[in-house]
Image (cartoon, rainbow, N blue to C red; front, side, top):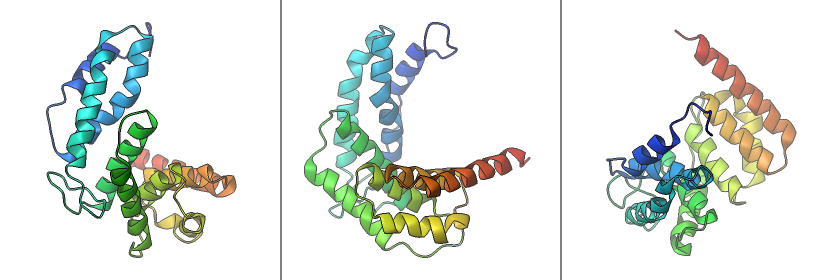
Length: 201
């Protein structure tokens, strides 16, 4: 991003700030990039950055009204959401908290406990696994993953992850815990899956 870049940063900021939809996934999708666009807009001298904090605060407040007592999130109200949604929303909340936004301790802890329970109770799979990999990545970023879980999925289930992102999330989680050989192997699998996707008509 910069004066000679092909990105219309001001336009992107305006679009994100006016994102019209309101389910939990859409609130998260609108607010997550705003956590980082603030620093970009400040560097470029754009005035939109002054409006970002209230927008992010409002998204956090609305999202937390949809969190159930067990820490999971529903799309429109508090309920048990699917594992991917829970990981996505928790990813946003943990990033917002690190960026200095207020995320209450109870909501934060319950969201992480819910992800931990999701991993603990995950059914066996021979294909897919992207939601589990994402949950493990979010937990690892917060120092809450169990390294034996990460190594199990890397050693036993590496070939079962069917998307590049699933392999990459697990690789990143392992890298955060200092297991670079397993991380490198999984990043390699992610690259192979990307090539297959690119070759598919």
